[in-house]
Image (cartoon, rainbow, N blue to C red; front, side, top):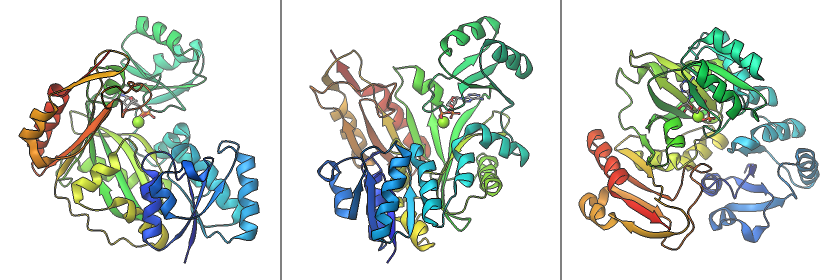
Length: 406
Ligand SMILES: Nc1ncnc2c1ncn2[C@@H]1O[C@H](COP(=O)(O)OP(=O)(O)O)[C@@H](O)[C@H]1O
Ligand SMILES: [Mg+2]
């Protein structure tokens, strides 16, 4: 039986289910985290054979020391982490313990967006034209080389933070002020089009499962306009000509970066002329309930599927796609506490069993910070075999379900 060190079992929200997946395929799961055991989610606690609590997960040397110490007493066969900020630490732990799996060198191109794009450029993958720059003069120079319209974003960005479209020199000067606190930016050709994902579960370089999700509208619009109810749609049919260039690019990216085993999450642009352009890739699953909609799309357990691929090197989940599955995130109008939720009963009566899951903040709860979490004030998940019907229902959740705060 393999002993798998897994962090972190408590956060983000999907991790307990990956923990449970590991236990289901017969692994002995050793959790690694900085919460005390009673603070762990029940699903994780039940899945864990043991738990190593460290004072601070971000104190790398401290964690390495604690894990080495632990490994002297208890054999560890594998280290897994599906959380972006922990990827490099996991790689370092593997190297310290002499275990197989992604090394630091193999992980860096998935973590450092500059190294990522350089590696993919070298492999001939279509990325937006890009320059790296810090400070006003360098950014102006980069902008002159790239040309308008362009995108300015942090090299070490996440969640569309400090990301701007720039159409002319006047706006560039404004954006220079807005990004003064960002140490280093990427100045990129602006790619107009739709945005999709290409997500996979692999072992030994073989893609066992792939998923294409569609972000509606584009993430930058989702993250800058509060009135929008962002949607992610896991697409039932990924076989058409339209998505083919993105899927092909995804396979080429895996090849170029030498990805072997685990979950990947790539984002790509589909231009109006049909060209696919690379966005970014992580060696981990997407967040914000995207794995749940994969499950709803296939009526399967992708969490267990990942664990099987990661631990046993095989994949036996039924991932025949039956539905288009959507998650729609809601943002209340007004500030403070949720006072009223309108429209839910009507929509439920109309959509019936196509709605899979509703998780809205209850009346009386404080609003969440929609800039900090895509989950915002809650979400609805629904699915339908027909894409147009799925989109129509998702749009109605966007417009007719209303949360009010005061
Ligand atoms: N070159 C670009 N052209 C057009 N839009 C972009 C470009 N780069 C980023 N964006 C927008 O900003 C969003 C966030 O950028 P991304 O590179 O995915 O970083 P992160 O998601 O880590 O913040 C993208 O989903 C897209 O909407
Ligand atoms: Mg992104």
